[in-house]
Amino acid sequence: QVQLVESGGGLVQAGGSLRLSCAASGRTFSNYGMGWFRQAPGKEREFVASINSSGNTRYYVDIMKGRFTISRDNAKNTVYLQMNSLKPEDTAVYYCAQLRRPGVTSRQTDDFGFWGQGTQVTVSS
Image (cartoon, rainbow, N blue to C red; front, side, top):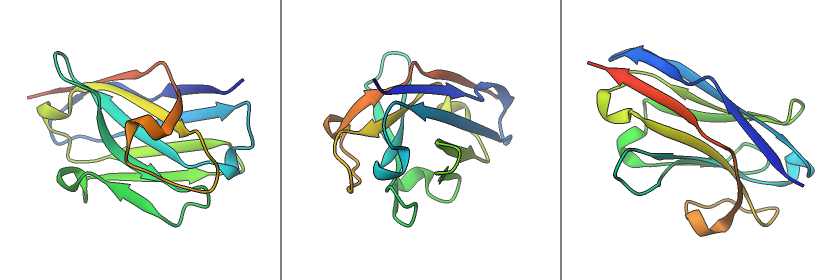
């Protein structure tokens, strides 16, 4: 059974930084692409970034490109999201997710079959 546990959220002032972590277990981590999504109050869950199994292909939402960086450490079964220059509109619950199938990556929510419980990120102005 796949388990994904996020950590690293919190309250930060605008312009600040946070690094989210997601520890995975249950399947061979290095076989699967991973992603980060977020959901703000009253809004739908949206894609943030994804990374393929080896870490050499990454996708981002354009508006976050340059501020957010996704990375992974396959030896630690962990994926990260480094968030810099945070804005109040980045406030949301952030979720990590693992793709259903090995060997691919995606931006599509439906391609991700396993989800963490989420970690709250609040950016104050």
